[in-house]
Image 1 (cartoon, rainbow, N blue to C red):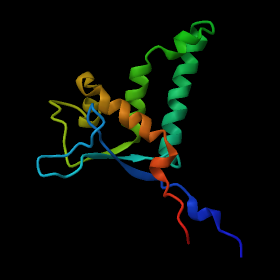
Image 2 (cartoon, rainbow, N blue to C red):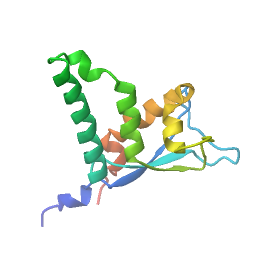
Image 3 (tube, one colour):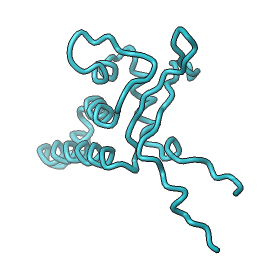
Length: 136
């Protein structure tokens, strides 16, 4: 019998454990790991968020007469919007937003930009949503 490759499908969601600026795991005061639950590249939500980000970049490029630099203008805002669309929840922590969405407020906080960058890199990495191959 041949191996059923569909057993290796990526999960539609996953948890990304947060890392501090020095790349060490982040924990709350009780020792619980801090993480965010996100949609994976295998989900429709991630696909739609990526498509929207690409549409915005293409529109900026079109309006600028084809200048690539224009497509990259607002890169941080695009990154924040994408993360807001794919983040489901914060785990073991909250962001004390005075008003509005605490997830957006977290990603907009430049003093915590390392969290934004870490989550953005991880959410675009299929390995965060697949299980390692093991001997069966």
